Image (cartoon, rainbow, N blue to C red; front, side, top):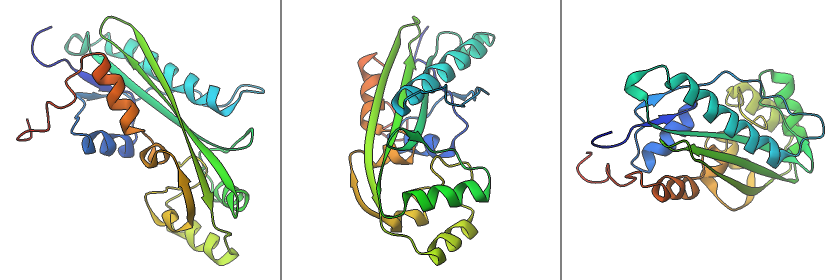
Length: 207
């Protein structure tokens, strides 16, 4: 391989793409793997986040291997899980799911855990798990209904997007804010840099 190594983001999430862009990193390809994200029986939230990130990365690498232009690329994947205790909240697809999540999160603390997995061109697998603790204010019925009407909850773990209107619900956040959005930047950049990916190549002159 000559020149700058290629990077595949194994995600269809615009939030993760935006966060990578915030770090000055632009992936060469987006390869979203369609996998079953349902938790296994008795699976802990942290284990689910790590397993799904790894599964996404491995599936995207297998798909990319069929494309000569992407052979030997770095593959980066992540998955974010919201939980209250051992209870894993869904990625809300239905209004009723989001409403149930918001009622559960109202006035209490929850955890947001993101598993990050990087597969290097040589096939080495590097992983991180990042946890952030978030506390919501007590939500009124009117606030919940108004938020549901915004549609921002659709497809979001725990039924909310902290970078949007739900940011007004947060009383306290301990840990990484971008982790709650969907990709912990410090740990992700550290993973890439640790494997000699040129993380600052795009910092000067938009190169």
